[in-house]
Image 1 (tube, helix red, strand yellow):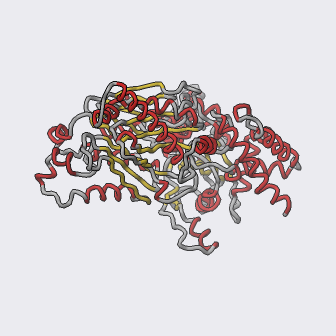
Image 2 (tube, rainbow, N blue to C red):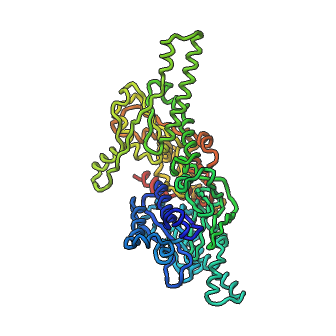
Image 3 (spheres, rainbow, N blue to C red):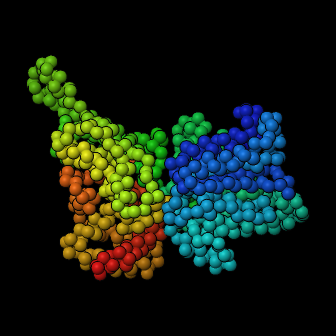
Length: 620
């Protein structure tokens, strides 16, 4: 989001274009393209318009090129203008679409499986009163949308679509209507009439009231952003601090983004110039340009999402870069164990592209280790070493190569099963003869292992062509055992290779009773108020060590025909917290959900699994 605090003429004079805000929004969206490739949308509000003129604009598009498409559409509105008109900020402010003071953009990454242009943000609620127009977008998943839906329909509302985005729009729009009506009555009590009432409303809308009467009803991780037709701008973070939001303010602009480097790059800033919204906090800019930071909801916990740091956010952030590097460095001991301390006969690499920083950390750890071994070797000589001895000792080094290359995916235009499987196996390619067959171990690090599909269908097969003595696949994050319900597309238990391995071990060892008892407990928990529920799924994993689960995963992921010894190495929970101490949200790995809605949905996920998958498997 961007709020211009000066007239458009100011930016024309200082930066050579009144499109300063529009151009910055484009740059911010491109710099956050990693957060969504399915669609994009933008909105703009123009201040000080007269009745009969549009003041709220929106463009949306689907597909990987959606950003280019929506900005091309905007620019097409300027094609027939001459240079004088394009350089005339007053003309633009009065006559051109998207020549405004408030801008908002969003990139869609579906977490629900729903697709289509109607699901692309931002969402718009129209009204003939400027102040009642609301445009909304955000980074969120709500766990209790059914409860909010019931609440607003009980009040007589009839939402057109059942999704958290539309339900939030309608609920917040309803509260905005009430806020406007409150100010209307206040204006009448002051003796105002006609358009004086309208002006009074536009200048006195309090978005803090709207947020305080709306957001307590939602359970989930979110950063919600919005614009009103009267020129209010706001962004609010959930009270658990799950989803991130950063902002920057000076006398020219107020800008908000999901990631700090986006603001740094766009506006040429240092890290310390930027502030992070705190849990339950909102930043609001009034029609008159006054910027306010308010604690809308009391903080409910310290559960900033660790997976944002491991994977979802760009690694160019100063702190995230250091955290990912530390995650790799902390894997030294378990990798050493996996390769039998044979560093000299091991080649280290990574699976592109998000694991690259963790890979640098892993190398850093091994370089330190090898330097320590060199010092010990020299000390153990108990004499001044010869030139040849020094050369032999100092020539030991960590062997790193770019083993894997990610190619463009060949998609589903081929539908025949065997053909598709063969194509899927070629998503990755290798650097041939980059290790000694049968002599060298191969260690490759990834940021996470979620479903294991790519490992089985592509990575293991293609890496096996190098004929390593042993293949060690490393995850810089712990085993992902539980669904996420706060904004990343991981919702069903049976999708996770760690969960499937756990169930398979229970079956192998005749422990079906554990599955059935856990099912009964989940059913019982779901009858309680959600605030009293506990996550029963956690007890499934208590029966097995991490190593036992790792071995079972290898058995399940090993492609037919691959005989190379394979070992999985995962980051520990302790290592996760050491590397990322300030982002304690680890529910993917531990089952410790920060909100009651998350606990409820985890129990429901296991019930769904048993009823839809497990019982069917047992029957047949």
